[in-house]
Length: 209
Image (cartoon, rainbow, N blue to C red):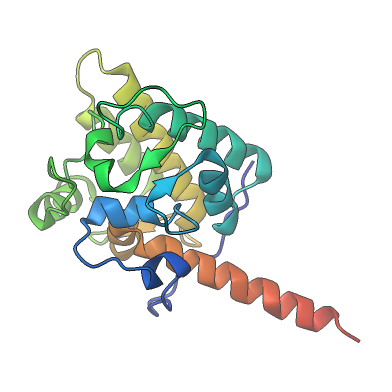
């Protein structure tokens, strides 16, 4: 199983390599996907997806499985008009073509963040805590969003939320509103990577004689 990083703080992370290469003009979804574009060339290969999940603290096996699943599922969709590539590249600029069904609709058809849909999601499903989702509420959210005969959408949505819970739930097992907001534009990813990197650096210093 993957290793869950500590829940993110409210402090904004410093710019990552990808962000330094420019996020201006990108949609929220493109920013989300761009975190996994580790060299900032606009294309995400399976090994970069793997590296991205490892940077978030996900275990090797889980990262490898997710990388294969994600790139196999999105490569063809984000490369319209191009033939199959065994390298399974995902083009960041075409991320919108990878939007699946049975989703929250917080992304519009162009991959832009829709504030009203985000607020609606919490208003409808966050019953116990107005600014956080419990595991039970997430299960109900997934069930509510299921579209008939959309097996791929069901599986994709389930895996996304399970991974998010594993990576960013707080000590009470909740996914806070700020955390969920951060995943939509990828800012949560850079924050988690920074925190994990800082924790790793502190651990190495403590081991020094």
